[in-house]
Image 1 (cartoon, rainbow, N blue to C red):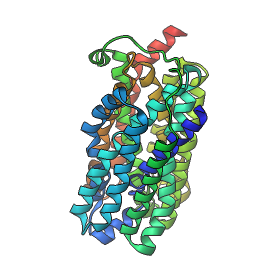
Image 2: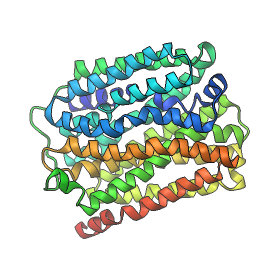
Image 3: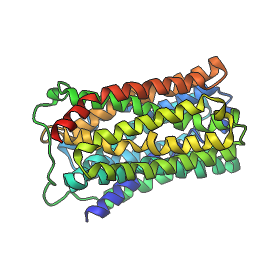
Image 4: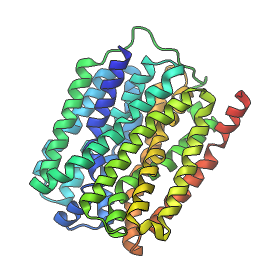
Length: 390
């Protein structure tokens, strides 16, 4: 039964994230149809992530009090209904409003799906299960990147919203119909302490800061990949979107593979995340060299970035789950993901603004490299803890 639960949680994650993760692939068309620049496009990406700043901690409390089945199902349903209503949007400001509502609904899906998986899997397989579950986001992004530009080109951006709404509603229905709580809680090793004590734990604080920095890289990939390949490497929007699909597909593989590696020894989780950051830095360095203008080299760099710059999430969320106080897994996940939302909201418009102000992508990639470097430092407490356990 637990593998069925994992499958439906992954599907619901992919379905709820489908449209918002495809905005980057729709970027050239949205810029043309709505008459907006890169900064305004980045604001569209951020709009769907603004409400979770407040919504994720609330969702965490709800998940600790009520059945995930209804909390997650209701949130995914709000995403679907809002996107369908968005087909009535008359322009850019109305679309921003729609995406704010979408974000409110999505607030329950990410922590709720993670908590549901954590409750069904013990520590020895939790990293792998979390990696598969978290692969739902890049999976949804890859499918969206492959289909939404085609739908948008043929029928307009409103048809893309309709598709996203129907997919989200399918995810909500699947979770409500299939999900059940486990007959007995799976064994979970947690740190002791209260909710306030979470922020006094230096290792957990480091994990939170690392999450903020690395989610910035992941968000930047979704926004800038197509634009960089189109403007710098000279690829058509269609070919650039195809590489974005490959990048997101690599992220799916990375989330599963890196999480599986981290399960071999729980002390290896921080090492896996650290190695991912080093790989991200190498690829970002390539993009700001003349090789970043080569279609082959830039395409390979983006696929590499997809594997490591998206794949880090499974081991990271397992770290957060295992550090949660007893009975507060939902709150801990909601808190961690709310902290990440700060970067998800602020980084896309900032990256777009840097692109508009400088006329290139060097400053944007450089900022993400700095964030990856900060993440390396932030995980030092986890690496010391891993060495002491070893």
